[in-house]
Amino acid sequence: MERGIIFRISRPYKIYRTMLAQKIVVPGVNGDLTVLRDRAPTLILLRNGILQVLDAANNPIERYYVKGGIADIARNRCAVSTEKVVACENMTLEKATEKRDAAIHQEDKDFYQMIINDITVFGNK
Image (cartoon, rainbow, N blue to C red; front, side, top):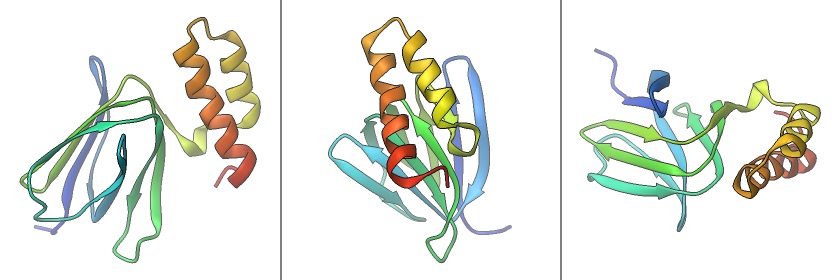
């Protein structure tokens, strides 16, 4: 069996993605945390931010915008539960602006503004 970390990201009532990963960077409320194999069990509270799945050379394979949540890390698995998740490659400045303007709740507006800020500064990579 290939060595790695079993990674799962889910929203309420739906598993969004499951895969085997080498490294995962989660946006913790106290700063980003890199999840490696054989890490001590940890429960992390997440902030709105970018979750990255990295290869062995620290290159991003997949990137996701997440709206808060928790990451449960134990026994070479990382289970992320979040309210909203969007693959970075599926989001454009126009989509994010449209969703921010249509949002009713301030926390949703803040989430989409975070995406707009990221795309404006770093582009859609």
